[in-house]
Image (cartoon, rainbow, N blue to C red; front, side):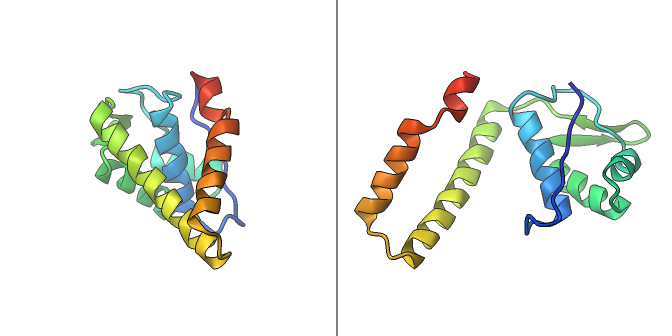
Length: 133
């Protein structure tokens, strides 16, 4: 399945981060397989109508995070997923999201009990992960 990246100018997230996150998610979910070649920096920039500098930054971040390898003269390839690396990456993202949620809850003056109840409700009613298994 080809890589699909959808950008939003109103997301409040830099374009390079949107690209990197969507490629990372595609790798983590198996949409993009290990050893698969990704579109070239120039081709991706052209397809997304963004600067080559933007796609270069996204790919560089993915290389630094251990998701991609740059093979000179050939392009960027998905590295095999190390299950421990994948788990650490996902845990870090979950912690960041929860940290932001707690900050917002504090702004709304929610008690710990209310926050726990909200989280429990979300866990109980969430089908996103359950449906993918």
